[in-house]
Figure 1 (spheres, helix red, strand yellow):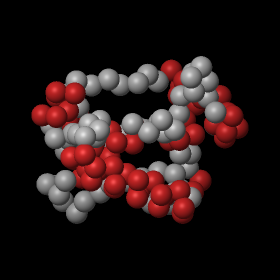
Figure 2: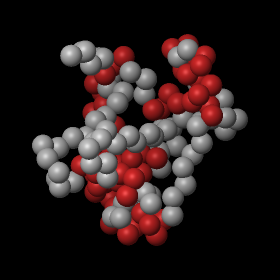
Figure 3: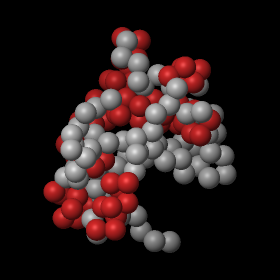
Figure 4: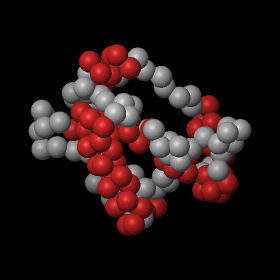
Length: 136
C-alpha cells in the first residue's frame, strides 16, 4: 500500500483563498503546476439554502451564540493545526452513526466563515456517502 504524504507537505486551504481580484496567492503558483492552478481558479463557490442546512442539522453558517461550540472546536483545531504545521484535516469514525458527517459539515461551514481560508469538504465514505444529503 502506498504511504500517505506527510501532512506538512500538503497545501493548505488557506493558501487557496480567493483574493478580492480573484487572483491566486504567489505561494500557490510556486508549488502547483499551471494546470492545477487553472483548474482551481475555475472552481466556483457553492451556495446552499440556509433552511435546508438547518433541517439537516448543519448550523455552521449561523453566528448566534448557540453555535459557539462548533466555533470553539474550529478555533482549537485551527490553532493546533497551525502550531504543528498541519495543512489538512481528516475526520473519521469506527463505524456508522458516530456523527462524523454532522461534525464535518458543521466544521466545514464554520471554517468557510473565515475570510482567510478556503474550505473544501470531501466525503470519502464511498460505500455510504452522507454529505450530499446534508447540503441538499
